[in-house]
Amino acid sequence: MKIKRIIDISGTINNRTTLWPGDEGITLDRIKNMESGDACNLSVLHIGTHTSTHVDAPLHFITRGSDISSVNLNKFIGFAKVFNISAQDCIKASDLSRLDINIGDIVLFKTRNSSLDMNGLFYKEFVYLDESAARFLVDKKVATVGIDYLSVENFYADNAVTHKLLLQNEIGIIEGLRLNDVQEGEYFLSCVPLKIEGADGSPVRAVLVEFD
Image (cartoon, rainbow, N blue to C red; front, side, top):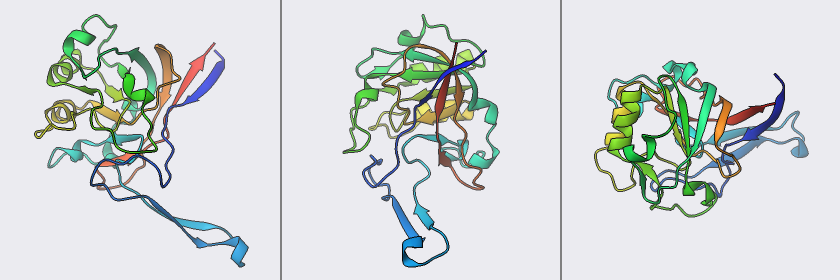
């Protein structure tokens, strides 16, 4: 089996990256600079744990949940199914019932979100998973769910029911995927979070591998 292509499905992190309202900005400070006579270039990065393409740990919404250093990496490395979902407001169980979703699957949902600019203003009316879709995925016992904006949850939700349903049932969450150039199908996913003890999430470099 030969690699046909590697598709980068990560957002770019820079000073224009779209942030969740209330999150701090991103700074990259060069503290050593070869142009100034230093022996090397060295930078310090200040960034939120849920910036751009990222993984949520259970600790994000569960008081004593596992931190990002303790998550099962099997949830973020393996074959994944990309589904194109036409829902304009939210993904419901009825949108998923006819899809080929099985126990242990990594499922990634491509929606109209993928056409949104992730280097600009935050867009509140993104497509999200409603409670029925979350319960459907829990019942299916999937390994992981990914979506193409900064949250699986409705921006206006005040109880985080979707997050809690998924995380309490040990389902991995990947948010902020860039799937605009990805067709429906099965790919190999690599989307590994940093091993940060005590953290509730981590930015990732997510890629899909397509084989001949």
